[in-house]
Each structure stands twice: as structure tokens, then as C-alpha cells.
Image (tube, rainbow, N blue to C red; front, side):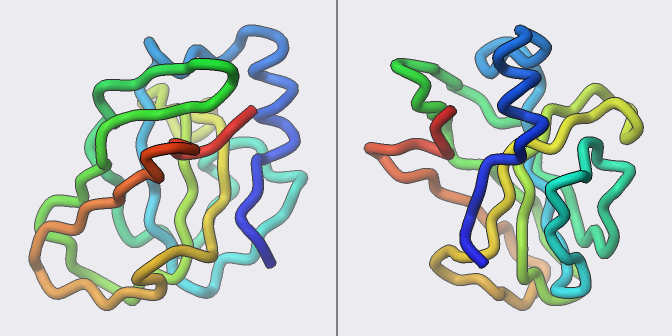
Length: 130
């Protein structure tokens, strides 16, 4: 499979239900057991959650290219991280939207060892484009 924008996220961006620059945006690290499903809309649909990053800071949106500072997983421990999901975090998994699924990236899968793990977005294409 390839990295992809969640179809429901595209709709939510179009309806102004997501504001990349002002909403809390995080990355969720997942075990290999989770299988992408385009019908999943909210974090409550995810299985195999290993950890959640801190909020992404320094976010910008120019021409639909969504950029931000690197995301931090502080002192990451737990199961092997094989996949990730960028999410709009509302503080409630039932309303936190799934934005972008990642299963292909440098250092994926990764085995947590209790050290900080940083997810570095591409300097040109950012985290993803809508």
C-alpha cells in the first residue's frame, strides 16, 4: 500500500471542518496489526495504537501543502511501529479525524527503545498535500 490522504479528511478540509494551522495536529504510531480502511473517519476506529506524538508546531499551509515542525514522540516505548496516522486531535478519539495514513517512510518499521523519536516532514512537500 502507499501513503494516502483519508477520503473523509478531503471532505472535511473542503467543508472547513479542519484548520491545519490552528487545530491540534498529532501523529499516532501504530503496530502492523492495523489495516488501512478508507471508511475509517475517527481515531476511535484505529487498533494497535503504540503512542501519540506531541502537537505539531510551526504549521503552515501554502497552496495546499501542509507543513510543520518535526513531530516528537518523547521516550517512545512499546511495540514495533509499522504505520502512522496524522490526525486532527480534539481531545476525544470519537471526534478526532484521521487525516493522512503513512505506511511507507524512512525508518518504518521502527523498534521503540525508550529514546525520543522525531518524525521529519519533507522540506518541500511537507507532511502531505490536500
